[in-house]
Length: 337
Ligand code: NAI
Image (cartoon, rainbow, N blue to C red; front, side):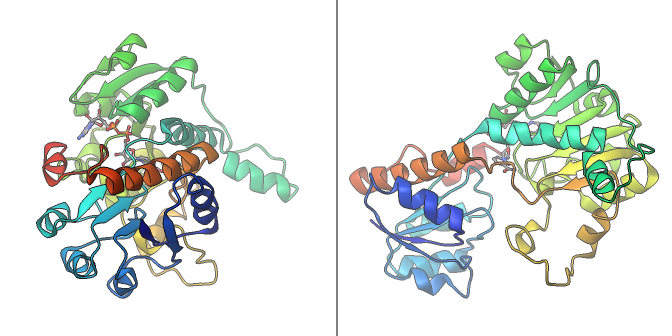
């Protein structure tokens, strides 16, 4: 099929080019995001492929439908950036990559924990400047620490397995109890309990209306003193201004995030020659006990290969049968909220 790929980087072009050898779709790669300004580029393409920071609203979907687009292939698991109801009304199908490497994301959460705890980011800079003082670099043993996992699905369960290997005590919070996690001795508790008892909390639940700002001033007030908060899930789970207040008061002792509420204006671009206008984000970067990475948790060779393979297989399946097992329906989205 003729596919318009938006928001592509060199690694996408390489990975998808390689994976397409077996599918032979007619791919055109665009570097630009899909936006109100660029949506007309997709005219005449039955398939449009986008990434997590390409927002698709009703107006853009209407333009795509007029240009004969029938399928939106998301190269992501999340679909909160697409107006599913508008797509359904226009007869446009949406497919996604439900899982590509839960290990990649879980391992990145652990990288943030280890870096924050042992202050690797600060030690790296000090040693490069000939400063070998270890003042201020005191960490704590992970062995015996209580780790709270909010959302014990695919990624949360693997994260729990890794932390179990460190000898941590595991607490979980989820509507469903995961048998792998129960097998590791995880105790499921309420949100106030996980906040009060955990030394480290890692967020692995999706962003829904219910989980939006799950961590706000009220939640921060219930946290155990000295808590480390990790978010590799979605930025909107944390109220950033409240987290900044929590860092200033000491209620949050460490913050490691790979996702940020307003990341669409920042992440995946080289802005090193520009003045960043987001003052909330800039304030976050001033704390010595905060590490921010730019939505790279998924970024491993295995995950990229899986994303490319599943996306192109989704398109092939749709071309052959008009349906796809990885289709996201408007009612699925409502059910998962
Ligand atoms: P999953 O669907 O396997 O697991 C999510 C779990 O969260 C489910 O068990 C669900 O019951 C639970 N949940 C839903 N709402 C909840 C709430 N309010 N409180 C507690 N638990 C709740 O999803 P998976 O594959 O583990 O992914 C988790 C999240 O990771 C995704 O939603 C996505 O936002 C994020 N992600 C981030 C990436 C990155 O590069 N930073 C890459 C891939 C996913």
